[in-house]
Image (cartoon, helix red, strand yellow):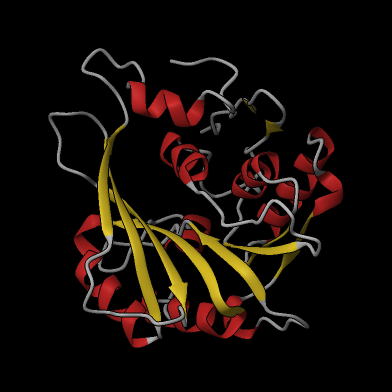
Length: 251
């Protein structure tokens, strides 16, 4: 049986090929990247160091580099084909001088300086059946990199008051909140994502800060819900607001 060839994902300022990676570019990942608002000061004289854990095609690095000219992004992945694909995608990206990719396991990742920000769209969902395909299983599931280990690793890598943006299934929100707080993260905002108005939210974007000054974990963070598509399959006005600077064609 011949695998279906994935056409490149063409954005306004860059193109993402995704034929070598275990998991292709998804509309949810694009919306996640578009909604991330990094706290990069306009007069920032030193590079804002950003880490993308499980970079895949490099999509998040490319989107954030487009929005924030001050950032220098490192994308890491345990899948060599993904690193090769992301590196190949640099050729079709005008921000290549500020982005690099490497094969690395976050549990053993070494670094010289702390990061100002970390983004992660974990392609593994705990407590779900693993795929029969070995590559997809590697991408989606890990016996060692669970949510607890991921958050603990982020705490080691971030500078005090560094920010974390995490996309995770809604049904794991309570555990995610608890795990973040145990690792000295203050949840700043939660953004729920609905496929359309008739469905329940399936994903949540969590924005948190590590060792935030005067952190009060009893305070409620802000929250909003973003509906991705209308009943007719078009982008909602809210989704269009986020994605219009990236999509070459708005569905």
